[in-house]
Amino acid sequence: MKRKNILVTGATGFVGQFLLERLIQTDCNKIVAMHHNPLNKSIKERFGDQINWNNSDLVSGDCGELLSDIDIIFHLAGYSSVSSSKEEIDYLQKVNVDMTENLAADCVASPVRQFIFVSSIAVCENSLSRIIYETNGIPITPYGTSKKSAEDLLIKIA
Image (cartoon, rainbow, N blue to C red; front, side, top):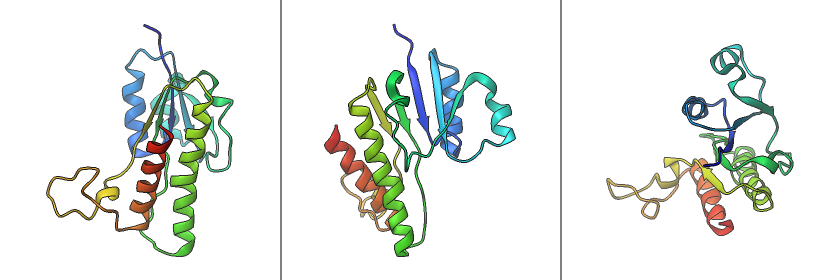
């Protein structure tokens, strides 16, 4: 079986770091981890040279060239906010929806065969049921709405 090249966006976040730890234990050929902010010392020490770090701004950048040898993407990068100011809502749209759409569009013309999107329970915040499914909840915050919009657009692209 062919070894996979994996890209993780939002790799320095809480979930991203735990995902990297698991991926290191698998038989991956290469793991590329994207981050926007400078890497701190503890992350460098934690992962050493087991990860190929790529410092990119997904919001403003084109990832086409980076995706040329990627098989699987774990898209964890996003922005969370509890504010409902116009500026925050616009930024949630820009990062959570537009960035996801741009990355997915770049994937269509690349060898990427799996795009795994990590969303949020905020998509289904307002549910009358104790068991929440993708269809029985309604986002009630701008953050939840932005993540739901990203989910909907990825379904259309798929």
